[in-house]
Image 1 (cartoon, rainbow, N blue to C red):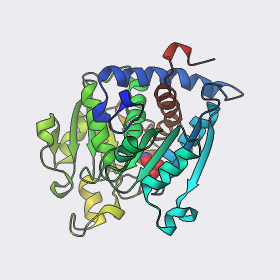
Image 2 (cartoon, helix red, strand yellow; image 1 turned 30 degrees about the vertical axis):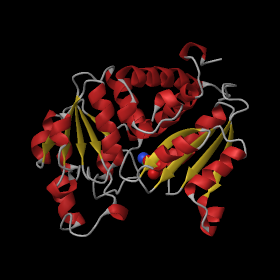
Image 3 (tube, rainbow, N blue to C red; image 1 turned 90 degrees about the vertical axis):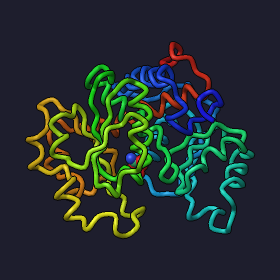
Length: 312
Ligand code: CP
């Protein structure tokens, strides 16, 4: 279930051509950031609903801005004060929203597979804004957009993803997208936080951050997801930082032109130091800005737009 069905559920479903089309459209969308009035008529008359069953700052806000800047009518459902608390199922909630006229449902849910299930059962375009430990396609797209914006291409770049790969939907989506575009991908983290079988996808695996850092063109640092940890996966946060934190001391191991990414929110002082986030090689704030452009592009293309007709 994916692009061809007017929904975006998994990076795994996108071809290299699909991804490039989204990135090129996002680049055109980013032009409107420089305008005094950030408004395009593109999605006038379309209703977009944000349905988030998990907390979010970046994803929810950037989808809201993307929809508003393209003139969609944007509705945010506050799950704690919705009929969900009376026991309404996620499918019935989404069907209710479709009956109220929703053309697009953006959903984040703690259970993997919920966006795919909705895409099959609801008469609206569905965008996966993160489902459990499965995928977070628009985060991967904005990470890849940020790399391409800085480097011009993904082909041949060595991208290192550091941290809790096991619980990370961001890592999974990034791996699919980066491999499609010809990047070399290595993951680094404790053995307990790296799923088995990644080598079969052509992904390098390292448990020695200091060894792989000097070879990376891009370092994408993942959040330690305390809410998804089962006990005993690593001895302590201090030990994690000692072995896998992108600390101030480790900055000297990086190439002078390496890019530092973090999808956020960051546990500052655990997986990344403040000095690293402030380093000129870090692109963390650009990632957030680019998130709006990428989500505009996804909304536009899912609603059937032509790239050349995008910017009015
Ligand atoms: N990166 C990301 O998904 O951030 P939020 O949880 O703030 O949306």
